[in-house]
Image (cartoon, rainbow, N blue to C red; front, side, top):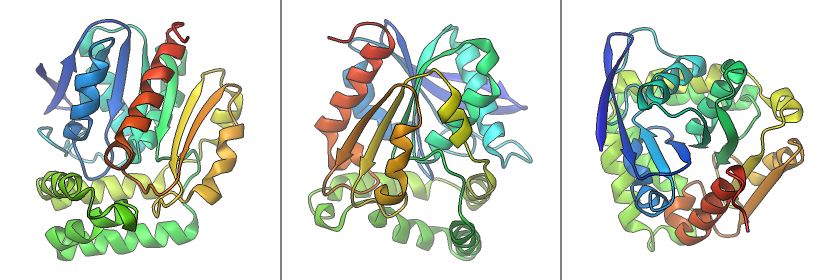
Length: 270
């Protein structure tokens, strides 16, 4: 069921389905809650599943001067507060993972989280090289938003999956085309300027789920795999021949991993 709330005088949208222990699934850039549609259908048979449209994405507006991960985390917090859930497992894809980490750090005193899932995401801040790439992307978006999206989306898949995942690629393209240049620039700026979360991952007692694709061009697994040893409790799914879009490229495997992680976080892992 789609819900609407006001956040910084701007309307945000989120979907809520199912009953049981709660999971909040946060989409990445430049997508919407629609990417979780299939996961929501399956997971809502056992869990309460909440999928926000982040500010400036999907059916949500973009508040003025929102361009930090902490700002997006505030939006997720507003959604959670409105939903009435008291504790939940937070799983984020790509930028959604960065937002999840910002949320965990900012609101750790509220005892809201049971676990964190990084779905093709990382605890590391952008390197100088990556920041330069973000700046190039910002300029590309300003010049030709549609062209930028059309070029970006196929690169989120392993080359060998382009044909097999054509439907998923088209879905992501359609969603991206609905995202304004202003919203894309805000997201790219927030990703570029986000803080490192390595210390948090090392220090927290929260369990982590890591889902990584060996062919991920956005978050290379060879540079990122070390983070799986940071948390005190972690589960890792490393996928061969998968890029940055595991929910399409390896749907069954990633859904299985997410479901079992949710069960673990809620004391029902068998």
